[in-house]
Image (cartoon, rainbow, N blue to C red; front, side):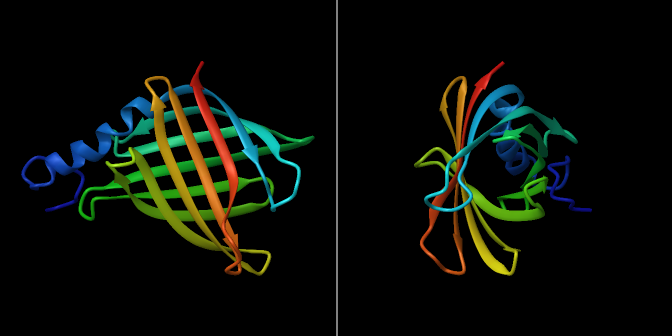
Length: 167
């Protein structure tokens, strides 16, 4: 049975290990300065991410976000999965506060830029939101995540920037 999980005998062991290895430097407890801009021209808000862990043999990377945006609490869960059959990364993000929604993206690791680049779309208050996330290690102990969005085919702008440093 070929599950694509990199199990012996499936022919996907090398592909699974390759994708999972890219998660390893991203795990652990991180202090994150997150800047959130809801719409162009709005005042940026800030929050913090607490931790990232690998699950189920490293195939999944789980991230919990807790913090404040202005005076409002923000929180969410992100699960990134390595799909060894398609050689892609799949990301599901669940916002549990401003507002409650689910975002799903799919993409690849770009060796030339050294970044994960994932894209997806979702509906928010009747608008079609297209989202592109770029995640890269900027040093041995730092990660930069940038999220770009456009609403109803408007110009893309940077909505989220997260700078990670280890705790």
